[in-house]
Image 1 (cartoon, helix red, strand yellow):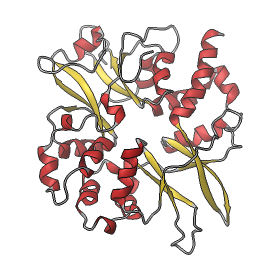
Image 2 (spheres, helix red, strand yellow; image 1 turned 90 degrees about the horizontal axis):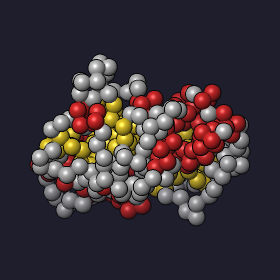
Image 3 (cartoon, helix red, strand yellow; image 1 turned 180 degrees about the horizontal axis):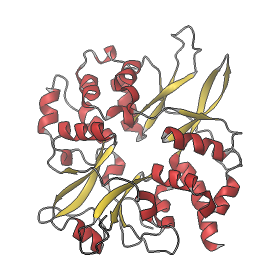
Image 4 (tube, one colour; image 1 turned 180 degrees about the vertical axis):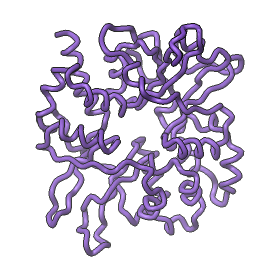
Length: 353
């Protein structure tokens, strides 16, 4: 499998087992945007459709497809006049926004700047992986186990008529986790690992430092930390300013999901001085846009943690330890990437059993 910086559909082959189509069979067609869509319109599209990223397309005669992509027959039929050239996420837009000079007209900049101009602000959006619906399940899992968050899957026409145009659907890490969780009979080696603890499976390792902020951290500084660290979430840790919550307690998370709303980003960039708008206010303004935070302990079974992540639509589980009086402290994070890496080992064993 090639690097995420050189996406390719041609290296993913068909298989008699589960295919990429199983992951997206019940999903809607991809929500995308033209390269010249304004940032304002792109954010509206993300917010209304509850998505954190939009594949970006342009006219075939004027744009080069994402590097290394080998189009399939159904992909060519899906959009004979267009090619996908990249992907833009809420973090790309946030990175662009916080780079604007102080005093800039935020509304004007959002309406005049094209999303193609912010593709690549974050590392992952510099490439776009595309696979046919017949792609081998293991082949789809491999780059996701290395940190890729999403694929574009080229699917046959819903009508079933092979001459009708096909469609594209987005396959995410969450789709893979949900499929694995919902079909344990297909993966006996994985099912055998589900009762094992996170620690036993090597999923409870503590990082030297955990990317975190406090509720009173200026929101602009927190977003700068997200971007500089190239992570999609920060733990929010109490600084002891609230008398009911001890210092060091885990109180939530700030993630890319909180940043897909134009009003939130507008306030993030416009409030002066920046210290006047803090993380707790941003989280309140973003409301329920982000999934509920999931916590886990090192001795918990993978199956139990996986079920909570699926049911909460969470992209990670924060590894915690008791702090006393019902409070917990965050000591690590179990990302979907980590879970898929463990699952991939088991799925490969099933494949060769």
